[in-house]
Image (tube, rainbow over all chains, first blue to last red; front, side, top):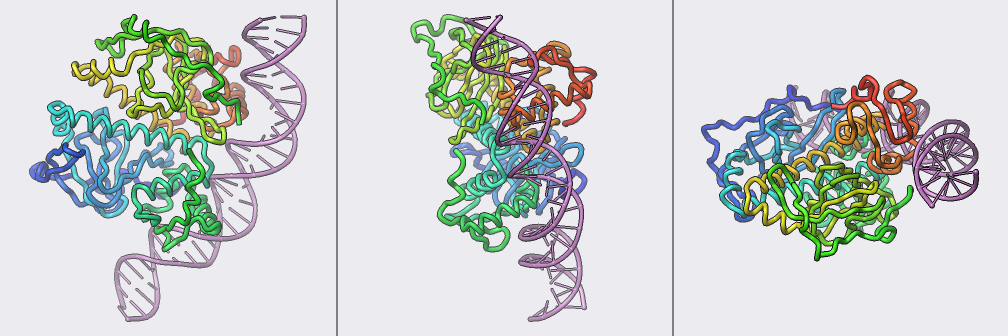
Length: 226
Length: 226
DNA sequence: CGGCATATTGAAAGGAGTCAAGCTGTGTGG
DNA sequence: CCACACAGCTTGACTCCTTTCAATATGCCG
């Protein structure tokens, strides 16, 4: 199914240790740590599924997808991250997921130890990390609800609403990811995603301006989910 | 769809403030807080979806389900919790879910503020709460993968494996929840759950001892997922 | 022992998947 | 600057897994 992104397909980006810590990265309001901003090409890996957890990441510009691969090749996208968002926070020492740039992006690498020591010394930082974790948990639970109980139309509508809030401006949504990415995020096939979007356009709920730019019309697809 | 558990169906259990704090509850190894152990009847609510977050809970005995209800009545089960497990930890001030006892259970109510102050004073407690949160996140992400990319047989197999590890003894699984609960957890219908279990029995992968007691045979259903 | 909730089983329908062409549009080379 | 080429997207026809609708069966509890 679909084109797979395995570890060997792309070179993993590895910032030189020597230059790490050059930039001041704002993890949360008031919480700043040193890190390195690295340009990452489209589809290049930021970390792989077996990598040791060494950093926490912030999207400076562009977009990131976090994925899991099943042994038989099925792919699941855990989450997308956009400019300003943090990702890569995991409890264990080995990444359970892989992360790749959806489009050419600039990613801040902050050493996990830097975040940890920041959190130990400052209640604010600790609190910020906690909030981030809680937000991730909420997103994952929402995602499970979408995958467990919504039909194709509802899933795509929920996705568009989420994207409108996070990657859109006004009623215009800029989708940096492919239909394959959307399908793997929503537990559907690319054909179903495509058909559903076409159907929504026919209904007048959305309008296309190229395959990856969508205008919402009258918030019609918003009506469904809690 | 299915029998619905709405807020009005059951009386919510509310421990008397006067008796709160009578028992010493172990939240994690070495982290103890005062709380109250309350008996909760089968299907009785522990908290409802709109309730203010006042407590953190620990299952002393029995089992708990945490659910979400869609406006049209569709139900999604976020998670099950068994003896020894903690639940109810949420970031906001209002519960996003409801919790009910699956069977008659004993639940420890610990004031959230007690946990918070414990965490503020002790690095250990803080760390324990963090670990719990991270574990929940991992579970939610695993659940999303199951719902997004596995078929009915694989979902049930994954469920049985999880139950064997958490609510079983050896190769024997004691399922306290109904087929409806399982279906709402796995994003299936009760008929599909039932048929799948029957099919697994025909294949010799499991053996029934009553509808809610299952013996695994040779770990056959374990073969599928990562 | 009866009665009701829970579970199983069957048959038919439907929504999403699969397989297979085309189409579009973006990037590149002539 | 135009045109080709390839990746990505759309559309169509058909299949299949899961749902839906409908009876039974089972079993727990009073």
